[in-house]
Length: 222
Ligand SMILES: C[S@@+](CC[C@H](N)C(=O)[O-])C[C@H]1O[C@@H](n2cnc3c(N)ncnc32)[C@H](O)[C@@H]1O
Image (cartoon, rainbow, N blue to C red; front, side, top):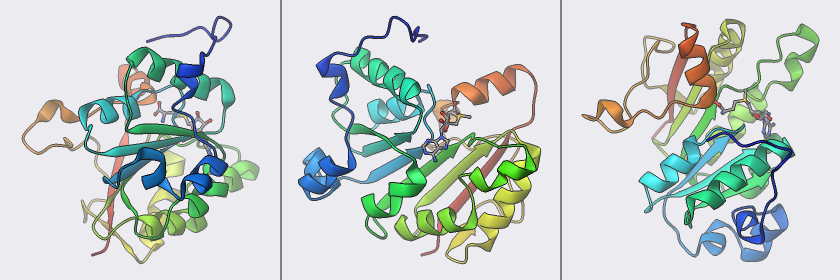
């Protein structure tokens, strides 16, 4: 679904899926926000992609929280959630995830974390802005429940080096596809259902151009 930013008008209903840090604090945490203690998954850096909507629609028995720090992109996501009608198991947060993640989620509380096509910041002087650095990966790992997956996808060959370094360097994570560092093709989410992989917008664009994609499958140690 493509939406023009200029004509984008969010209704009160569209905005219902957005929560702030204060909302979560007031509710006493995510179970208060969702009125549910179902397994909670997080996607980092939504862009305009609908992966998290599709996950939430396919798994009404699970909870999903997405982060995006570009306001216009988040508004597009809110509009798409609004068009969808009812996704009571999905919320989005407008924030730099690296600043709020550890505050928002208790240790060992997440059942899945997705990081798809994080901005590669190709210039060397910008590498410090990359989301997947050792400090943030350590925070992600501490919030994952034992055995819970951390999935990362990237096209960027240079970022791949850093991703391998920080994921392998986090002692509480293990590589689920070892001895391979990553896979060139995705593993279907639901075993036996080859259609269950949900490609993101960036993924589809790169695939159309025939560019290689790197799929990382890690999990928190049990
Ligand atoms: C390259 S896009 C990928 C979007 C989508 N995941 C996909 O695969 O199509 C990366 C997105 O992450 C967002 N982002 C990057 N760093 C972020 C951060 N620290 N907190 C929240 N969002 C972030 C960017 O604004 C951008 O929309």
